[in-house]
Amino acid sequence: MRTAIVEEPVSQAAVWSRRLAVFALAVGAVAFLIVRTQSVDIASGLAVFGSAIVLACASLICAGAAAAIIWRTGRRGLGAMLAGVALSCAFLAYPAWLAAQAMRLPVLNDVTTDLVDPPQFSLKPKALEARGGRTPQTPPPAIRQAQRAAYPDVQAILLELDADEAYQLVLKAVQARGWRIVDQSAPGGRLGLGHIDAIDRSLVMGFPDDVTVRIKPLAGQTKIDVRSVSRYGRNDFGANARRIEQFAQAVQDQLDAR
Image (cartoon, rainbow, N blue to C red; front, side, top):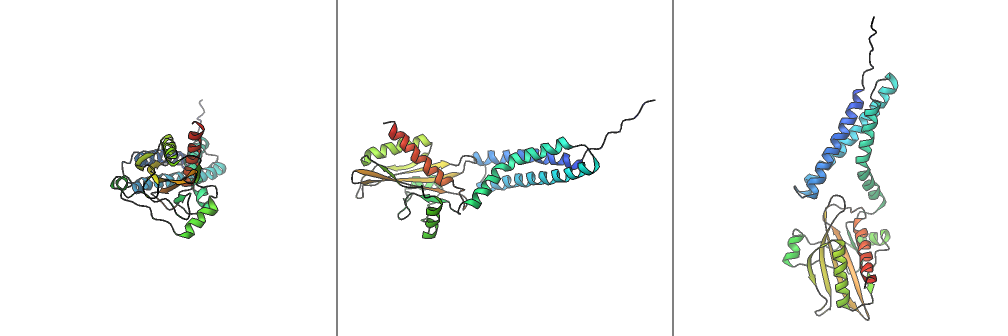
């Protein structure tokens, strides 16, 4: 006589936890691709990414319910539940890091090495077109004070070079960073100033950010001021300050290679 083996039922909450986590990853990948390739406008891409975050959170909620059910009833589904938790946490790691940065740093999207007289962006038609018609305005003093407190190491770059040499060195540093130059002018004119306007992209989502570099001749040296502005959002999560610091290192690398 055969003995029928009755398997314990599987927790549906655990199954849905895994399904939602996989779906969140798929939706997040789509959002990443459409934002990076600029297939749609940024707002629509972020809305899709937000939907992926909601799905990942729903997966964790299902995982919590599954844990309680499995503990109380002994149902199967532990593997599916753990898979859902692992996939959801992996996806939510980056948004969680951004949230931590938002709590730690002030709300800034415009950072400069000169708080008193920030470099101004070019108003030439080509530069305006590259920026989508936007021209960043100079933030009020209160915002600059917040920058001073948050990023005391963001300082002007002083080079023991004449203005023309400094300009060529800065051009090499811009190219080394992979920025796309949209306007440039060698030092000269009544004030002797030079400038380079460029566009950089954020590391993960590829958002375009605008950068301008001012080359100012001084007695026996040249002062390099940089301003980096995010096009989207009120909070850059520290990206603009990092960009300026990385650019300063690129300039130093070019100087060392001379």
